Image (tube, rainbow, N blue to C red; front, side, top):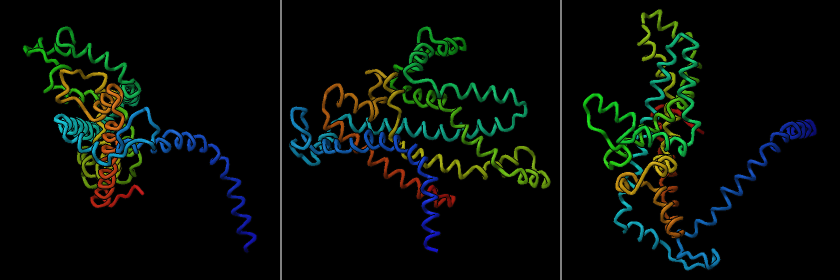
Length: 306
């Protein structure tokens, strides 16, 4: 029996080794670019200068954090990040679900596929390209959006230069960009629903709306919760590429987020220790939020990711 068990293990290993070899380059790349840089975290607790080696720096403990939290603008940076990120998180949970439910009700197959394709396309366009498009579209002078507002008797809005409007502009444009991509997950979840549930609902006299309300939505609720859990960890990820390409000093008071703040003090001002401290702070908060999200999903719906 022992010889048979050893032979089975050997056969399993020979069968699985090609897949492990395929995975090996990705593991090596991840280790090089994700794990080795962990050593640089020590800069968050040092008075770092590029003239010395990493482990020869002066150790200052939590002084960098004390300095950061004493800065007058750091609190607003954290608030801006949370405010913009939460708007994006909520919008990217609600609107893809609504669009997926609406698309699922469309019976014209070719029209449905066309709409899906049009909605998916923006996800594959980088913010560097989209920024130029939105700058033209949202221009207060010649932009098509303000032309439409003027046509109905409203005053032009400086979407990218008005600090009161800028955060909402970031949320709306991000939701528009990711709307089609988010619907993919929910459409896949809807197609996996057992058709007999709908047949039973029809036999009980449920119309299309009640079928959606009492069959479709409860069936995809675990997937909605999963997406929510995966998104919770991104509460401090307000979208560096988007904000960096669209913001200006005019909207720093409401549009400056942690990532753009790190870029300015770390790259432009070369304060690497402070930038590392901010990045480590954000990572720590995100880790805690992910754990809380997992606990919440398990408590509300008995859904476990692991």
